Image (cartoon, rainbow, N blue to C red; front, side, top):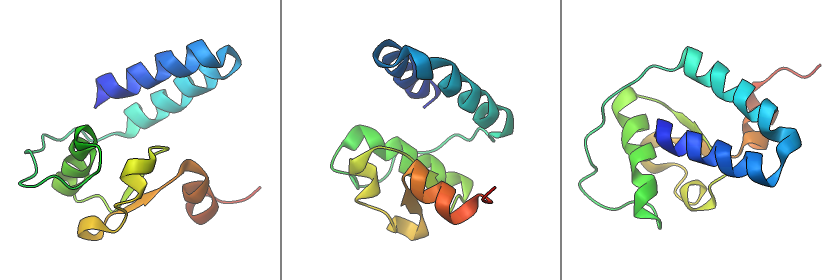
Length: 99
């Protein structure tokens, strides 16, 4: 998953150089608060994009109740095993204080 985050960062940085530093800063915050867990492969494919099932497996193994992602395929399975899958905007609107 960390490799996936790094790859997304590289792609975003190439497409939007002005956002590259902001992405790195967010990733640093996420990684500094992350609890690394080893997840077993799911017994069935859940997501339209089977490569995304690793995110569900990790969230499930860690007991997480929220995944924040821009990935539409993942967001379509929101609610699987009690895990809400929110866009960054949805997460901010629901869980972060407003200035």
